Length: 391
Image (cartoon, rainbow, N blue to C red):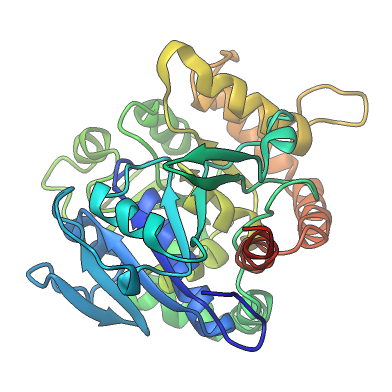
């Protein structure tokens, strides 16, 4: 089971869906890229096919095994099962430290040489990950390595397909493509002419306050929110069932509920909007590649540890030359309940709008900086080949 550039390896990803769409979103993007760009034979083990189907409509939730976009998708039903060494992939990835079935691990230990075993960790801007990236740990007589995505050359970098920038440039190259895409989602020409905002957040976000600021603000805003997101606040604003296709205009705000869309269409939504509210990890990374102003709603952790993670990113991305927090940082802190700013969104939103040109310029510079770190899929394969030679 020797890995080489000439012969693409096989690879298995084990994914337990905890954050609804973020976990499977990351694993699905990685699986597709490894197959399309590197010819890797990928098997994606997923425990929640219902959530998977929301972002990949071709998934059949009744099947134990199926093909999607060249990737073998297996329904990970339980921890049971007996596996033979020939069923084991050359590279085995456990996502967010999920527990691989014991039978699979036992078969891994019988392989000669052992497969490259990686724990693909969550994305963080904290400095400590640079010292932990690719560190080995002995497990069941094998070496398992911790692989961290990140924002520096001492990490695994960010997920990014090779043709992503070309796709974005082609989509944004003229108003026709943007208008056609938004029209398919039910957005009217009047709504397109307003400041367009996509809203994707966790239920505890202060959405009602934000909607009130837009409603009472000085200029028209169109908010596009996927069905089921911020459900209580959205339904209260609409005053009726907040199903896909529902909309209402109050004051200067038009709120429109969208259906969940496949990943490629979600990219287009980010490209089509002027500001993007994103959550978790997958949409957070896609917002960075979209090059538009964004506000990140971070996944909550015990003892408010997510605030530490948020500020680590903001220190890299959202501080002025003198070290003070900028409009993106202030809005992000308030959105996540870290620091409160008076008068809340009524003041934060105008400040963010006034700062748009500078934010756009910084977004382009940030992308160039991130590109220097390579992309996660390529970096992961390069490390796997290196690790296989030391097994």
